[in-house]
Length: 486
Ligand code: BG6
Image (cartoon, rainbow, N blue to C red; front, side):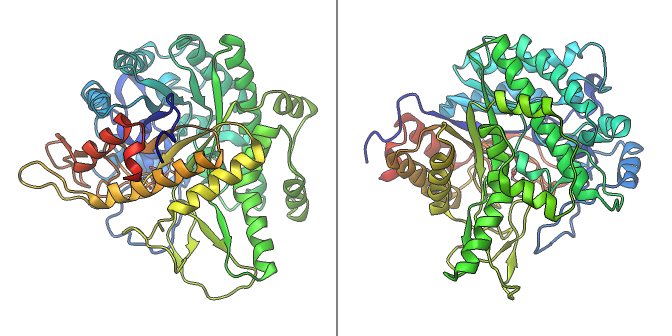
């Protein structure tokens, strides 16, 4: 199994601004949805639920400066520690670092005439720091951090106006980072939009009778925005590569009954493929149009929208991979377990982490083959890993064989997919340094190779410690993945 990974394979890690940066109100930055998501220590849910972001929640958070119960406001203070943290990524040998830019930092009032220079200087520093270490910066333009001002002023992505504002924001970034950033992702996991409406689309559920229609309308505006900025990016620098991104949930039929396979196919279509189809093939697939008709969803979509979507397809597919799913045609009593954003049926063949997210390395190979077979453009694995509880020993070490085991199995399956013939550009595992978890705003759910001494309430020295997996991943990169099969 030698030399499976191409020489130019991009190994690295990925973070988001809203889970790492902190400094939530520095240099004029305004609040975003993650800044209003409270940590709830009694939340031991067995079934994934989306946080209920209401106007009351937003109002209460706006009047409160607290950073203990609103953990994403403090993050891991990456705003100040980025230099040292990036140096640690360089020590591991990262060839790429995926990071997001905060829209609310760059345009604090949403419709400012000019961007906030101080915010851009901060991102200049991050990008330059990466380049200094020969790390390729890969930028996510919007990662689950909807600015509150855009919800208050316009009603979020339901309003077509957001397309224009997003284009302006992107143009600033493309001009500024021309020649420095090659890889861009328009929206993190765009297929989460329908499940996580407020978090990603900024559409607040107030019991509207057409709420689902509003979500799909917001999503349509995001599709038009993504295609529009793909055109702008290519115009500004033809070397730019723009990725669409989904969190792919490969879906198995519960049994070999044909009805279960049909249900799995339908779920796969509306939960995964629909998004890639629009952004890669440039049109709405027949099954989505049927779904809209059957569910009385009437969207406002113009000929110009379709022209834009048709002529500006994504250059690569970005995908995160956390867990697979099961579909069943019957309303049978299958136990549920947590999964990323969706709850999923429990698969008796799979182990799970402490949060109930099931671990399915082979599913990654299935996913990669499925995507490549369908779209035949390069794939970038932009997130993959699992949350674990870690213990910091008194000598500053952290023994985390479970993390090594998880990543090893997934990287092996990625290697096998490459051997199958799938074109994979790179792999940015999720959370190379511990950050605040997206779903539950806790610190105890750790992903990193680097331990951050901070608990759920922000106590701790915030010092960084190298876990055993730090050295393991370093070796994987150094040998270009060869040792993963040892
Ligand atoms: C992904 C998100 O869907 O899941 C990340 O893009 C998130 O932002 C990751 O952190 C893991 O989820 P969680 O809730 O464990 O942090």
